[in-house]
Figure (cartoon, rainbow, N blue to C red):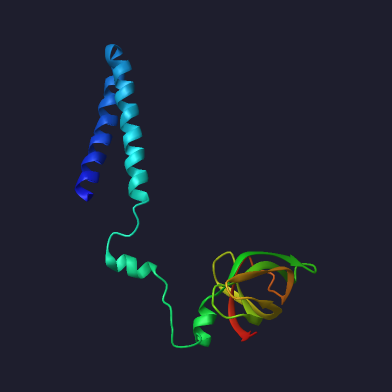
Length: 174
């Protein structure tokens, strides 16, 4: 199948090239346009087909499947690894000294969590880490769900902060 896809790809690209060269000559221009068009259509078809084929080897197929434990509840560390801070936006408030953040806490685990500890690490324009803030979000986030947090006061920040990245550091089981 891979050899066939390779040959079809080469044929399509060749058709595009031949069609474009034919377009240079006045007598062959119409036929050249047709050949180039069919070459582009063929290449698009092959690309789309190759894109949606899925995993090719058993190693890739095994890597895609989630690991499911059947020997009890997941460990604290496993759940913590499945808690993420997404869609972070923030601004300086209070005369440029306080960080107001809006973000989404995603719980991709099988356990309900609450009282999530979020740490934001701040850096300057040069990329140097210069500050960090840690706060607890006193909300419950059900398993396989998310909780939006809007306008959350993360506390005082350094005046030279230009970028910030937040992560979940701890939680309590709900």
